[in-house]
Amino acid sequence: QIDYDREMALIATITDEQGVLTSTQFMGSRCTPGAQNPLHVPEDFASIQAAVDAAHPGQTVLVAPGIYRESIRMRLGVCLVGSGARDTILDAGGEARTLVDLSGAPGAAVVGFTFRGTRQDRECSQPSDPFACSGNWYHAGIYLGGETWRDPTNHAPPLIANNAFHDNDVSAMLYWRG
Image 1 (cartoon, rainbow, N blue to C red):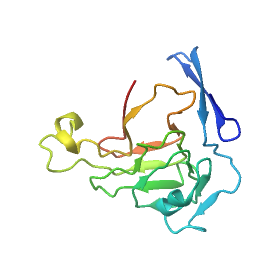
Image 2: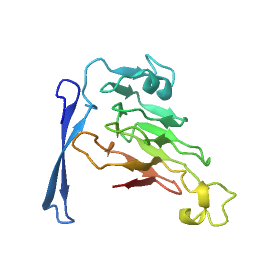
Image 3: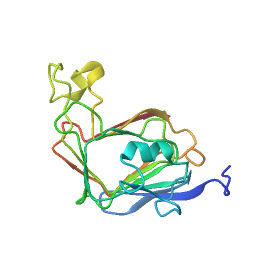
């Protein structure tokens, strides 16, 4: 059951290719992109990761326009909101690394960024085929791995919305169980 004092409700709607509603899912989520008391990058924190680490579940991290060259590990229920995909860029600089890891961050959100420049490990014999790279295939703009979403009503999956992906070997790698 949802504890309405601690969590917000999120209604997810799923449409087919023609835009016809196929299902609706009610999910509990601690993250509300317009929440009060946001943390600001770079005004309050020098890095996005420092702001995410300081945020409490349900709190929003607002990121000013700019190019950011860091990898971020999200936390439970934290909303990461850029200033729009045209203006807020997470750039891997052609390195083999993930920009945002959503693993272990139920109810989190990543909104309003461009993800660019992620590459596969050059040790991989077939960098154009991420599934041929054994343990090195997980470098992506956004990564979410190994989660179980058996009860999305109380344990909401992360929200990824209004983002752009440019010049990545793998833009998003999402897999889960259940």
